[in-house]
Image (cartoon, rainbow, N blue to C red; front, side, top):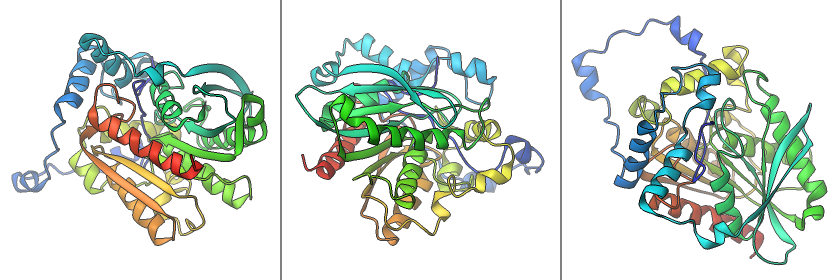
Length: 361
């Protein structure tokens, strides 16, 4: 299997040091006083806990404790959310169920990449959302994040093009970023062929995909491509610092931990120096002006929370219209779980509101 939410969301990746680099630095045993001073990790809300409990029941192992192949085959938070739906007899929302899809291959930066086009009910032409899934650039794919894309298509009444990309460690950084740019250009040039309106285009990404979406917006600005009208970044990878408050609080969180992030970094980059690349370290960029209105969604129980909140501050300071919200009681990967986690429904509604406002719907 792959890793993330298909009722769903994303898995992330990034930061500054590889596992090997971290191993070279001895970590002193914390004293009782240090342990007492460490902020306690928040407890998940009951609905979120039910998904996490189901994930363990399905046999998921912590990310970073298995090989890439084994991790890719393991149960995902998406699987757990769907299992909770089945246990409780919850049916998908009618509008979400009515979304039709078409799979195809398109040119990437170096080879063909898969995409899935999600078509809402109606006659169109429709606005277009280019969506990038999570998974730390190592695991997961468009199947894993199917629910997120469907929810956006149904809610925003827009065509969603979920674009895959080459994964590490087979294809190291910046392969995924190059493919994301290629996918965006293809969608702009070909949207008319699937009843899309390229004058109304936006970007959405989760976790590692949130980083990709942000970088595509920067590329569109710098290369003077058709500009996205908005971007929605869901717990994006946005920095290289693994000592932020949220990393300290949530070092042992499920499904994304500090260990998991270290594992992703060790698989994605050729060297630790690459993690300081401005495409990864968004929060330390000084060229964020001129980007589209941005919505950032974060989870409280997530190592990536602090960098998402910091990115919102940096974008605002650069003059970008920015809205950010951290949802309490939920973890990384909660976004696509609208059917079973109330905060996920709220977050999806927030994303949809931002997109429909940008499209003028």
